[in-house]
Image (tube, rainbow, N blue to C red; front, side, top):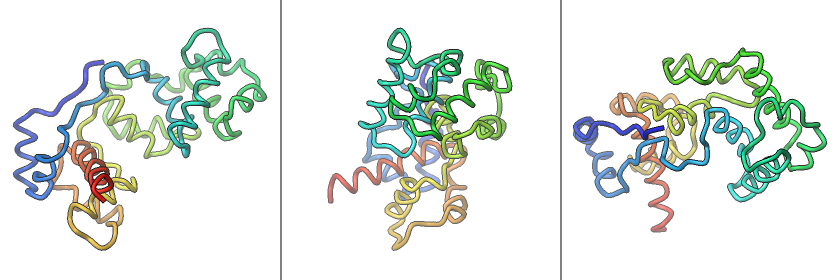
Length: 214
């Protein structure tokens, strides 16, 4: 998939609408566009399966478990939906998956196999409809669906207001004592439309930059 990048004139307009964010945009790494070339998440299914495996784990621990699940079937890739439903719980649990994640992967696989969820053309749908379809899958919540929209589909106007990193970035950006509530952040973010994914990405970078210089 080709990374989706915002129009340069739209980026300049965003910086003009919010000079505080604009200053951060000028000093931080430019928005790279998503999905990134060479991503190991080569399919929509793989991206969603990874999201389930990686939930609530550090990157290293999740990568180890992910590798063990891949080793349960032939080849280096993550088991296909038809393979997931054939694997026994003990093998999946033995790879390090929790009971909840085993159930979530099975639900994802079963929905794909019986076509309650169809992914090959999901990128043609509006954001809210995609979220509605994805959150019907066990173990995939609104935040995970929003990450799919941003990083897998390259949608440019998604704003994950419950994300702690985005809220912390907004706190640092505006020099606040406390993190804004999700509702306050949603209001604050209206000025960033139609590039709220871009704004969120820079808020994550604001946090990283602050940590690097602390």
